[in-house]
Amino acid sequence: MHLLRLDTELLPKYTPRFYHNVTCCYQSVTRVDPEPGATKVDKDVDNKFHMGRCEDLVGEAQLEPDVEFVMVRCSATRPGWRTKKVYTNMHAVVAPKAAIRAKLRENPAREPGDPRMSVLIIGVDSVSRLNYIRTMPRTSELLRSHGWYELRGYNKVEDNTFPNLMAILTGMTRPQVEERCFQTAMTPMDDCPIIWRNFSRAGYVTAYVEDEPTIGTFNYKKAGFKHAPTDYYLRPFLLAAQDHMQVRRLHRLNACLGPTTAAEHILGYAASMATLLRDNLYFALFWMNSFSHNSANSPSAMDDRLFHFWRDLLRSGALKDTLVLFLSDHGMRFGKIRETEVGWLEERLPFINVWLPESFRRRHPEAEKAFRANEDRLTTPWDVHATLRDVLRVSGVPGDATPSASSASSLASSEDSGTVACPGCQSLFRAVPADRGCADVAVDQHWCTCLEYASFKPGERAARGAAEHVVRFIADKLAERQAANASTLDAGWHCAPLSLHKVKSVRGRELQRGVRDFIVILETSPGHAVFEATVRATKTNSSTGAGKDKKDKQAVQYELLGSISRINEFWEHSQCIHNADLKKYCHCSRAAAPAAPARSHRRG
Image 1 (tube, rainbow, N blue to C red):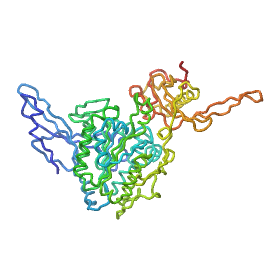
Image 2: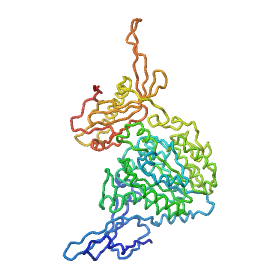
Image 3: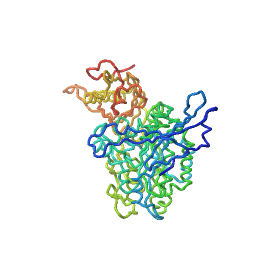
Image 4: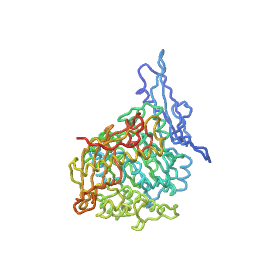
């Protein structure tokens, strides 16, 4: 049992003048799980929750062990006036559920000298390393002064959150994940080999918490999970808060849920878990979008809160046996800053700080030395995945195998490194090669920050040809995907054919005579979409005819290298399409669908 207590001393702060007789009630919030053995599961199951009856709260109430989330409502009366609501808020607790108690009985608390570590991951969406230093100086200085490692060469591997986070959690690329366990957008991801499953089999208590349930990593244009993926899963809490409390939105995100910021709900829960389970093993992932996803400046508002969050945990000793990752998935992906060279770099270089507990450093001084070396070398999310597998190895779980009875204390050797997506990647407990390049770690050239480019004139023929190639690629992709699955579009709508409006900037590098790579930023019409792409231009000899007096002309072949980035906002222009991959290309139009993709045209 655990208690829900009403702090009566604070009631006057919430009660208006002349109101009295404050009464409160609470109701539990639970996930609506499928029936055991059900063969057909509602595809919307991850978006459902149940609100219990509002029970009277007088002083305090004993909650059942499995009650994790409650909504508390208080009202006051005034003679001759209607009852007034004076308090509505939701509270989440790390409840001592029966399944957790059983897991903890099977896996007793750590004894001194136990080599196993817990893992705490705190993620802040869309924050580059430089923007982290700019907007959260107190937090960054605190962690630096306490000996945290900062991986300054940490390079993202794909466009947005899902593939970059799945690289950490599965060691796979998005296509590999799709082939393995995510065949369509409506395929639940319960069968994906996410590493928290391995930690759970090793006896760890697991948690996954993410604010902004509408754009959540596993739920934006996706089905999420049929069953709760971890022991603690706050999605029902956040859905109920979004639907039943007053929400204050900032930059189109749920900044405040009732009287509390969304981030405060997440951080408070994370602090409770780290404190309550400090002597037990846990793997917890907390992800925050609400104050960072849509604004490069908003993280500054959370600097003080994050400073106190980390300071309090460090002072309390709650992290004494915990590996901590404080990181982002990528930098700001859209806005005017993205049209600059600095913005190009920042988008690809998210921040990551790592805390290694003192006990681990003493046992493995070679790992501490390796981390120091790795701070200024090229690292990737796949290296982080390999590092987490190394933590499992220390806990007696070799790689992805079933937990063994004994506890292995050795870290991975070079033969044990690599991931499904990146055989050349490795645990960061070993120094990565100083001469590492993007090709060595499966980072596409479009995302690689290790290469130098020079500015070119946008009007240069080869550069403009590269931009036109990008527009043709987009047109072909839209036509192909819409023909294959018209159900992704609302009835009566289609994606307007795009044409090249102008080339905004070009940078390039020459690989060899006649072969150049361009980073081109271009604008299309209608809608003024701004795209960025990396294109290889190769000159080839194309004869105009046979005969000595015929002069050979040089043609140029173009090849798209990696993905295309959309670097300005497109939410309002793409609401008619429900395919997450096509949204960035689509400008919704009610006009009759075109017979064929439009060609690019020149603008003077």
